[in-house]
Amino acid sequence: MAMQIPTNVDAEQIKSVRDFVASYNRLVETCFLDCINEFTTRNVQAKEETCALNCMDKYLRMNQRMSERFEEFQMLANENVLAAQKKLSAGKKS
Image 1 (cartoon, one colour):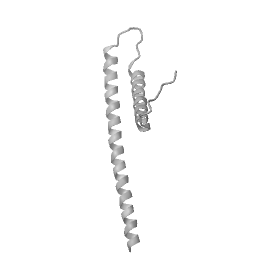
Image 2 (image 1 turned 30 degrees about the vertical axis):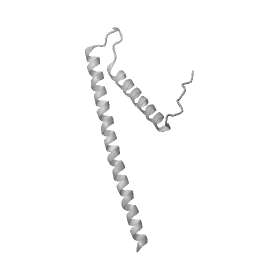
Image 3 (image 1 turned 90 degrees about the vertical axis):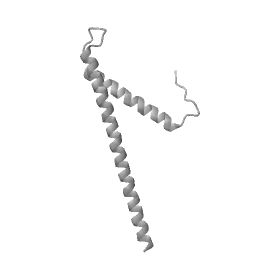
Image 4 (image 1 turned 180 degrees about the vertical axis):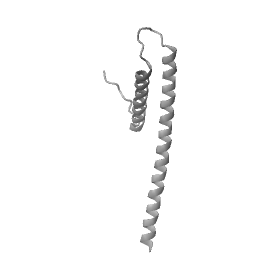
């Protein structure tokens, strides 16, 4: 059964949701594989819960830091492009 996408949804919004879901799935898989290793009981053990919470916190902080660094890189790249354009414009005026 195929999922119907409303016609008023922007393609960028769809991409954003897909990226979020993919990131969430990576987080869940990574933390599950690292922290959950006891399947003989229905209850989550305290050490597993602590590990999962720490894993999630670390993953989210890492993701936030990567986003900050990417923004810094983009700003620097944009500044370099503007500087190059100004240099070219100044060279044409001479």
